Image 1 (cartoon, rainbow, N blue to C red):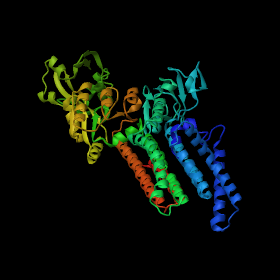
Image 2: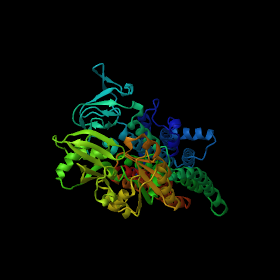
Image 3: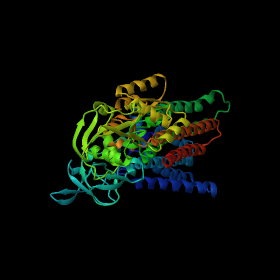
Image 4: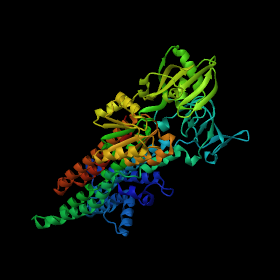
Amino acid sequence: MCEHNHEHSHDTQEHGLPTKEHPWWIAQSKLLMALVILLTLLLLKYAFKISLPFGINLTLNSIAYLLAGIPVIQMALRKASRGDIFNEFFLMTVATLGAFAIGEFEEGVAVMVFYQIGEWFQDTAVDNAKKSIKSLLDIRPDAVTVIRNGQQQQINPKTVTIGEIILVKAGEKVALDGTLKTEKAAFNTAALTGESKPDTKYSGDAVFAGMINLETVVEIEVSSVFEDSKLSKILEMVQDATARKSKTQLFIARFAKIYVPIIFGLALLVLIAPLFFVHDYNFKDWFYRSLVFLVISCPCALVVSIPLGYFGGIGLASRNGILFKGGNFLDAITSVDTVVMDKTGTLTAGVFEVTEVFAVNVDPEELLNYAKAIEAHSTHPIAKAIASYHPGSAAFQAEKIQEIAGHGLFATVNGKHTLAGNSKLLDKFDISYPADLRQMAYSIVLLAIEGQYAGYITVADRIKPNAKAVIQAMHAQGLYTVMLSGDKTAVVDEVAKELGLDKAYGDLLPEDKVSHVQQLIDQGRRVAFAGDGVNDAPVVALAHVGIAMGGLGADATIETADVVIQNDEPHKILSAIKIGKITRSIVWQNVILAMGIKIIVLILGAGGIATLWEAVIADVGVALLAILNAIRIQHKQV
């Protein structure tokens, strides 16, 4: 009930799994016929006390046994031909044929039938887990509307080239990455980010495959071919993730290879050892006990439920817009005790906003009109923040605009000489202003009109709404929080103070961030680093767990990070840690459950208390309980 998963592509037919030649309904109908025969024989024997003639009884049991057991016997023979006899198939074959040899026909059939029923539950659970992961992201439409030669054509998205224009109707999924040409549109991004809230995009914004257009027909200029879309890369990454085994999975796989031959040896010992110590030794009795020992010893519950648990964890994370690159990272994130974060884009929105307007000898509204008129001619993020903050008056027009690099702008606004820039600009024109403005943490735009200081406007990167609550939650979980930023130290200290971070460092180059994280690692801390994954690629790679924020925006996030958070919400870092802990908890519940029950029944079987019936019920029952427990992960809320 376990090992064939590791050889699924090679051994499906021999194990009775569905193929073109062996459809699923044939395999299941054989198992159903075997179950009907077994239940009929048991009713006759135990309910109605009817004893069938030996020949008829043997024939019916043999038919049921072969219907259920031929795939297992074939697999056992195939593996034995390659020198591998220490596997569950050989173990089950020996145990059930041994039961027939001592006349326990129904018990031998029951072992094989219920074993196969357990196999069916296992295969169904694993397949459903894999399908649920794939269905979360494989939502690319099979057809796309493209405009060619002025005509709309329905074609396969794989044939669309970069630069072509595609149309997406309301309710349709975007098939390819591109740039929005329509003025404005709203999209459902839940399949990519885990967020149900509509995301409004404007002309020139990036739009990604998998998003759903919500309102009206939009035009998108294709920027990536089908295979290179973010969705395709994410899907490929999630599929690869199921193949990356955690330490627990690797341990269990190694354990099973050692465990099975030991069990064979112990079963043989149960049969032979009493010969030297028991006066009334009965070969049939002790042979039966050794068969019970073999049946209960199958490590199926472990080998099945553990991978299924990690499949479930990866699927749960995907539904929440978090992509783990493998089960090993689900394990790794549970041991993190230090979370290091970049500032811009992780804790702050990366969007500048006006935070204060201070006017001297002029009305604040008038000061803003002067600032708007002159800054409207700059593409600098700070200028854009001022332009978007205030609509401005058409009566204020800037002329003779000159930019002084590193200082600011000089222009004539409504006939008045106007300066807008940093303190260096005013110093250059010998305009006096309060000296303490040089010490302000946030970015500041000083204004002077007709050679006189007129006031200032402060602009700051907006802290994300839930960032402070996230830091508080991290502290509640005992996590040490650090912020590393290339922004100036005064700004970084201000943000750190507002958020309540343990440590913060500013004015850092990428190599400085690497140095700080290395120091934390040298102190014995288990570090997770969350950043944008582009400029921070070296430190993302260095950390025990590298987390890329807003992974849809940059290829480097998908390439470098261990975990990709597809939007830029910092609370998802906590969600990722929680999912890792949920997965680990359920996996270890299954390990303890399976091993505990098996050890008890092994002892009872060797002592002659447990029969083959208890053995098969314990084996299949534990496996089913473990599978059901693992499936719970997929339905957890985080």
